[in-house]
Amino acid sequence: MYESKILKLKDMTVFTLSDVSQIVSGKEYAKKLLKKLTSSGELKRIKKNVYTFHDDPLLISTFLVKPSYISSVSALSYHKLITQMPKDVFCLTTKKEAKIKIKNLASEIYFIHTNYFFGFKEENYLGFKILIATPEKAIIDSIGNVPISVFEEAIENININTMEDYLLKTAKSSLTKRIGYLLEKNGFKLNKKIKNKINNKYLYLDPLAKKFGIKNKEWKIIVNTK
Image (cartoon, rainbow, N blue to C red; front, side, top):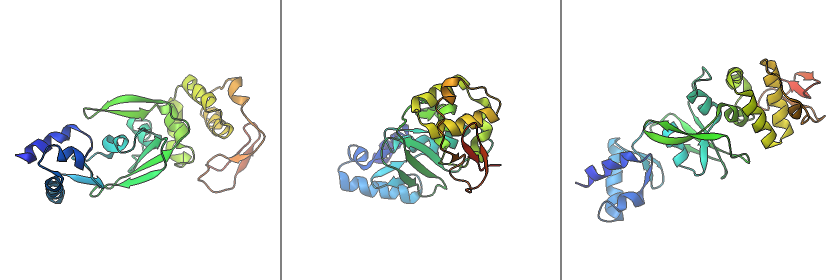
């Protein structure tokens, strides 16, 4: 009887021991029932006292840490802007960084701290509402978290006005120089407000690539990508 009621929790992306305790007669019985369902494979334990019936890490990710939104290559893949399918899920949060591995799933979910918590929208996904970055913010969030070679193909399809607005909002010279260089490389013309953010300190285009390359005097970038 109780098991059929617990199955209704499939209408939630994730739920807790406390949620189950309210359905069954007490916390101890809830623990036994959850153990039975996880042992049978019907249910997945995410972390202590947190469970899900779902197999898609993209679906459950932002419900594990709040506030957060799906971004970087995960969002770009969702928007069908990159050919490489990421195995893991990348989320941005105002909370501290974390990594969650779900048993029986190959994926890991990375929560990356950001001071720029904007540039995302609510999307319908598998019957649920999730928060996911716009393509422009997903590119910004990718710098320093994944190699540029993984996401650069997405740049040609961005909205240049949105990207410029985001760069001005972050007011961060290192982001502006790296992304500004990539935008011009992909044929975009940038307004003077963006170029005014360039300082004279050279930095590597890709923070994750090897530390050698050719200097670009206009953007004060050392190009260390192919």
